[in-house]
Length: 464
Image (cartoon, rainbow, N blue to C red):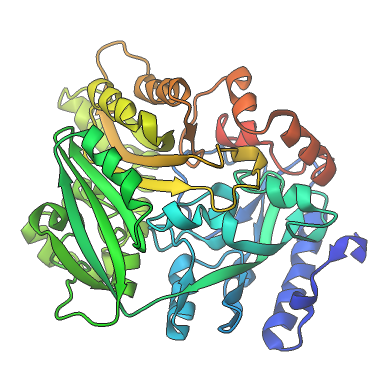
């Protein structure tokens, strides 16, 4: 493999040890890809993952990417950052906050990587204004399946890859370096929790609130008669601040108080401590267990590792079977529904699946003139992201994918979209019209002509 495919942007050619180390790491990675067996699937050897779909492990070459973590540079005046693709948002935020800046969208969990959020989507409470993380990317250096490292931008020779990269899940290439926009922050966030007794009332208020002068907006549906929207505004001072990194639990505070203050750091990670509310499955919300559980283990990645161990060894499944408990189906999904149909979704989901609570986060496309080919949404519409994560009992003889298939059917009926970070159960005929179709095929032929990387259906549905 020669250097003909090496078209790094001028910013990545900047002098200095960090950029020199980056260029050397790129050379090593390209050499590793060239040396991989041609018939082996290629994946990144990441230390962390926030994916919730098991994958086959045989015949896979893993590329070492430890060198692609870190922030190369921050420009406080331009409000931009050059960031390596394997950098976690925890480390990215730690680098930007001292400059009074943060990424435009910071996904909820600390170990989500910037490259992962861009190729696999991400969302948070600024998404009603800033869209999804890929919409704040100015340029990327992408290692393609063809072994080239290309700088892709909204304009130019590789604009098709720029707009086709989000939701490609590493099947077209891997983002090694990203230049992203940042926004200014203030020290504190003032929260107000607004309670509603019906979905219609809640989503009507959401449509009004996205036009208000607020900085953050998300919500929680505890039941069809108890829903909350939480608005956040930056503040320079706070008489007191709450701490949800130890004894106290953030999601419970939503029901307990009308107003609250958090530091900007603690606000960004308010959901990580208890993995929203999923830490309850490990007993960590019980007062005695909470006191004994080391504070440094109150993190989403710790819970994720516990889930991975259960998926691998099935200790709890065997115990439940011995106790005569019904089989359960994991239902771990994020879906986007147009706000006008959000109440219909929530009612059907509560009736047919029955999981509570449900996270609600409004989002709109930031630039209405853009089309993101593999996850195209109505650029003028307001959507509601519903997040629900847990297990649901299966009735006797119910197929193991019963509830997930119901969710997929609901999303289709209501004109929504479904993220692929978790399990998907579509047939190829159902899948491709939703996720790129012939456009994806054109991108695959151009940037991975020899099929070194799995295609999107094989990776996200067949879970190879």
